[in-house]
Image 1: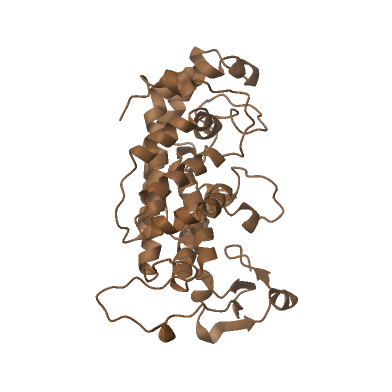
Image 2: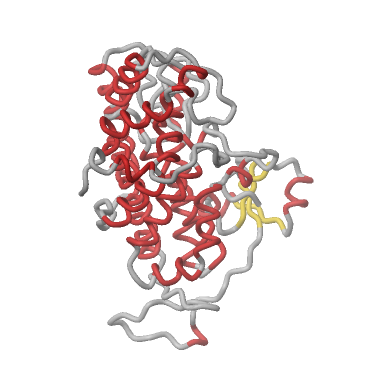
Length: 384
């Protein structure tokens, strides 16, 4: 791989810093999604390239409007975009934080209890939302729902990007505890170490990062346990928090940056120094996000029956077992709505949460309106 030091001048050649900003994290998500298209194997790659625009739109925008219909822009404050792995050691040293990360509970209910114990009101839901989208993607492959395959594959990619970026894994997301300078920045590019490393740097070096990640992708391998794969990536991401914080603080001190005005005067030099000291690190995180997205999409396809994805309707991939006549092929399942006698939430029939409701507790509805008329709330994952 070429060095960030030798190619610094190429990265800035012809670039204008006055270009209008994209939504927060949108550039990172787009880079990861485009790299994922390159690393998928057929028939998945052909299918997603044919439907590239829809997939990219879902990967970049994510589930913001699905889970928060009233929202009008992407932010970094949606709970599925972060998880505070070190919440049990908010004021601890590096060793205490790493121990908290290692012992972080994998079950959502256990994590909520832990957050409550340490007074953390919003600890994030990134790993479980990502796993919910994985389950929905697998089910979409199984029932051969092409639209939902594109939607949930995009959401898996979106969340994989956030899981790969270090400051989405810590309680000190803006580096305040480490003494990193921060200030108000409504555009979301420079106001904190998270914004500078996750957003501003990626925006400045977009073409360079995209090229590197597509030419030298991350490690692609079968995923036997999606939950373990997700949490392993999160742990790896958290490992780099302190290093990035120190690099950012050192550069700002060298440049005598104390607020946004002084940062903007030294912006080019700041990103130049950041590229020399942390360019490879940030690039490696985006590679890891793309590798996780590729591995999860492939695993969902495999566990969903390996459909060939031929339009307009895809059939299962032929294997060594006898083929099934078209008359006996798995039909497209009609969508209806399901609730539980033990819950006030209702779901689409293809939602992963609906599949977990025991038969004796199931309640069916013809329309969402009928479910709402009985006081039930729509599921935040499938948004019926």
